Length: 342
Image: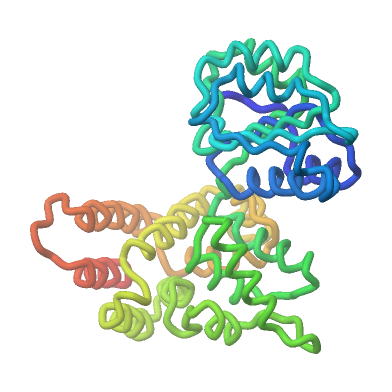
C-alpha cells in the first residue's frame, strides 16, 4: 500500500477554509466519507457560482484517459482566477504517465482533485507518488476503527452544539457501525429533531429517531454479558430471535469479539487494577471507557476469555455455513450466549 504524506483531513479543511488552495489534491483510500467531504467543499467554495459554468469540470476515470485529464487541467480559466477539475473514480484511470508529467509541472491556476476510492495508488509507482506529493496534497482516507466511533460521534455533534451521553453514543455506534456516510446522515436526522431549548441526545431520542431500542440493542446485550446478567441477556436474545429485522448474529458477533479481544488485552496491562492504566493500555480517550473492562476482569478469568474468543470464532464460521448444515442463526446465538455465561 502506498504511504501518504502526513496530512490530516482537519488540516486540509483548515487550509481550504482559509482559501489556501493547492494545485493538486489526490484523495485516496477505503473511507469515501472524507474524500467526498473534501471534493464537495472544493466544488462549492473555490469558485463563485457565476464562474462555475466555464471553469468547473467534472470527469470520470472510466470515461477519460490520463492525457485528457492533463489537457483539461492545463487550460486557462475564463474570466476567473482559477479553474476546478474534479476527477471521480480516479482509480479507473490507466497509463498514468501523462498525469505524472502534469504533476511535475501543474498549472498554478488549476485546482485538480483526483478522487481515488476503494484503495490507494500502487506502492510500486514511486515516481508517480513523488510527483503527486511535489504537486500538492496526497491524502489517504482510512476506515475508522470501531473503538474510535464514539469519539467521532461526540465530535460531530459537538460542532453542531449538541451533547450526547455515553450510552446513546454507544447505541448509535453499535447499531450503525463505521459507515460514516450513513452515520452522519443519521446524526443529521437526530440533530434536526431536537428542540432549540434542549440540544441533548438521549437513549429515548435515539430510539425515536434511529429506531434503536434502548432496552433491546447490541449495547444492552454487551452490558448484560459484561455483568453476567443471565436473565437480561436471554431476554434480549429471545427478542431478537423473534424480531430478526431488529438485529442479528451478524451484527452482534463483531461487537462481542471486539469486547472480549480487548478484555484479553486488558489482562496484560502493566497495572490491570487501575481503570486509568487499562484505558491508556487500550488507547482509549477517557478512563470511563475502560469501566466495562474492569467489570469484565472481575467476572471472567483470562482462561475463560480465551475460550470465549475461540467459541465466537467457531460460531462465526458456523453462521457462514462451515460445518453447519441447518442450525439457524438464532440458535447459534443462544448457544454462544449460554457458553459465555456458564
